[in-house]
Length: 515
Image 1: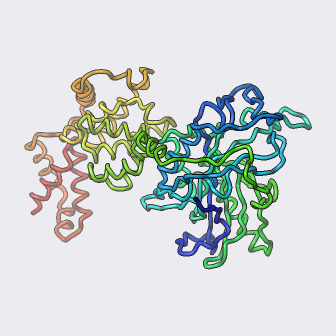
Image 2: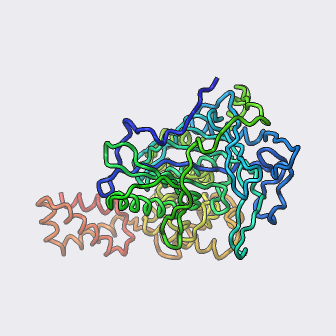
Image 3: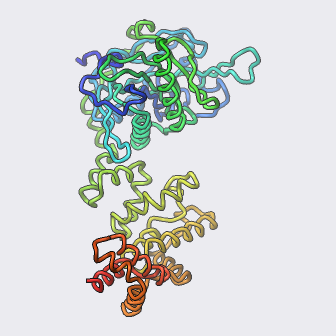
């Protein structure tokens, strides 16, 4: 039988690394993340979970807790919990229990929320991610199934509030981390990685604006080596930008409270994006305040091993496994591989580019470099790119065979992007044809713009000789051991060739003549 799994935010973090100090204080951050599961119906009823319906049109008798109604477990919600457990390397409890979490709020029809407490369905696990090029790992306490509450609406109701119960009963997985994060950068990177995982395996659409993926950040500060400070929980952070702003503000606020001689009070707080400040919403409850007890209307949730095995067999290749494969098969760095597995669409684009003949390292550099700049400038994903993987592979091929330089390739990429954008057609429709057709398109632009690298060795040698004849000072300095002088000579040759000289040939020729 599974043992009770409890939240450990109040425990000391023995052996956990100390992060960067803020004004002499260590920052401790843990997360509670609500991922709305991608089922068509609610967790205990057959009502629809579709977003955007008219208020109170998708709440049935079970969601409204009318007398005589009973909850029935949604099998699809359980399968999604199993998927998450497998993806995070967690233990999937063979037996877990639903409990009633008692509190009273206008948008909670039953006066309690059906959740899990002592024995959750997913126990343990971890999330590994990069902060810059440094790998970090955050341990997880649990992930438990529960129903969402409704929504209170305060706008357009003068002196009153409206209640929309469409969301009541929507299936959620609440994913609780250990307080292992030591900076805002770590916290945001963790949230992004978790968002990637739940969307990758298809259990959540990840739409933060619609509330499908929302995070609560528990933040406290302490002097190094001291017990954990009093935490405050920032509720419902629904963008990574606001997450960073909210946590940074809260850290500063807590430090100032302590240094001014005041005690930080445990509380649930909200972040106001307009003011950039956090404000207290209510005092923070502890588990005892909710008076949990097993729900008498729901039997324990039993998950047999063969069910887990079936779900595992249907799982896609996970991002960390795919990244490891990129390292071993393509010789990429851990960091580059992690960047290319940020989404299934990005990984597919990389695979398609390599399959079309591009060298993996060059493909990685161009996808995470110049392509990423173009995508970010228009705030679109790789699936909306105006340059197909095959077209990019053709461009990379002309870099690899020395036809054009990197700088020339950037100009060609910009032209290809612009042409695709002007056509207004999705990338799959804009460039349809054989690989030779794509290469011909790239070659035509190279010729039209006069960007072909100089391949005539005799002409290049004449330019090098001319530069050496007029730069004796740089020659003397290079021979005296100053490497910068050599770079200056390379620059002069490139200038004289109008950027068309092959840098590798220039280097080889200069070194040969200077020796």
